[in-house]
Length: 352
Image (cartoon, rainbow, N blue to C red):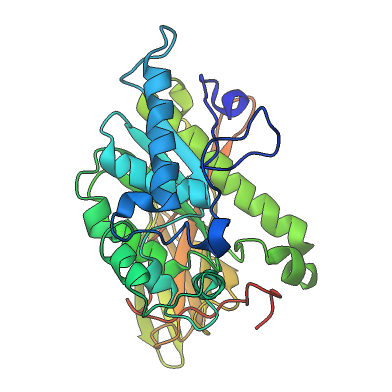
């Protein structure tokens, strides 16, 4: 991250994390006590491993803010998976965090658990708990509830997620996104999940490497664009486009999709505008390159997208005009039912 952003960076692990004596943090890991550490919220939510992870982040912010070579008014946070969850939780509690880029990690786990194969069910089962357990119910109503966790949020948020994430599916991503009342952007990596793409991706065009490359473009691009824009460290990102505005109109057996796309200003240009859709609650996503009709208007004709199991969004890739082009993407908020049960692979085998 330091080389990517050109900034002073502190990297940390959650309680019990790390892979060597010199980088292992204090406390019990998330898998301790058969995973009960994650759900240890009775009698106090501060017993949860997720909260310990969040406190570690805020202690890191304190360390950074104390350094003479760090501007305490330009502090940000980013993290992947549990690090993304901690990024949301810490940003919701600590006003010193000005900019946040959570990667493949959201709140609203109760939305994730709507699906029978949701990976949260496997974690609960290992801990001898279920969605009916008091620990889960309290955790969902307090620590992981987006409106509550983000009520005091001051940071500007750029959320990056995979369209097929088994831990944090788009239904949970949307619920978390909707609770963010500050300036925000979104980027969704098509057909990227939480690791199973290494299995199913082999049968897709370009293989699993293409899926991973697309996800990397979005994660790295969001970090570069968001931090450099808000911390004013790179003129290429002095202006950041708005997200595409998308409408869907039924046309017989299909759907006309219209996207109004921000051109990007003097330093950025649009490289690609693509519709992504699923007709089976997120199990598989197809994509379709949209047609440029001029003046920021892009069109595509797709299958019927106004059903109870459909999901659709538009993703725009921008590229800088400098000598060394850099890319990032902006996605529209996925259109889907608010309580749509996600169809995801099982945690134990990456299969249905």
